[in-house]
Length: 143
Image 1 (cartoon, rainbow, N blue to C red):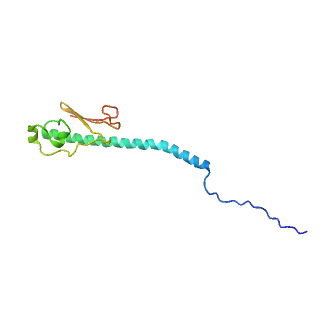
Image 2 (image 1 turned 90 degrees about the vertical axis):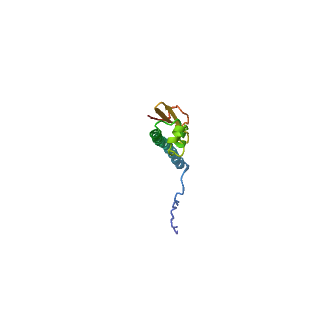
Image 3 (image 1 turned 120 degrees about the vertical axis):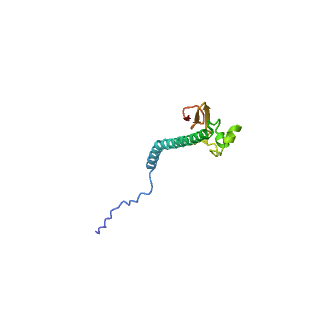
């Protein structure tokens, strides 16, 4: 009897091509968790940067008001006087040149408010909510 050569059956393994659904869902879940942690931090940093830019703007405007006070020996009645000069004839006679070329806004594009009380004044930004006299207002007082 002739014996047949015994061939062993080998299991052919193919290289894996792709990911399983479970692996994809796990990666997606990790990305969502990381995004949930990181996104609020990035958004907060943007608002903080706008608040800091507004504080710089208010300080610059304060310097312009102080320069007006030195030139005119009085505080301006409105921010427009820094650009246009005083409205009274005596003030117009002393007026040399505009101190600012345009009335600035805060970092959120809201108008800044200026109020004068005797020899002191207040500059205010409405802050992120755009509403004056709320907790997020940015305030600068001058004398």
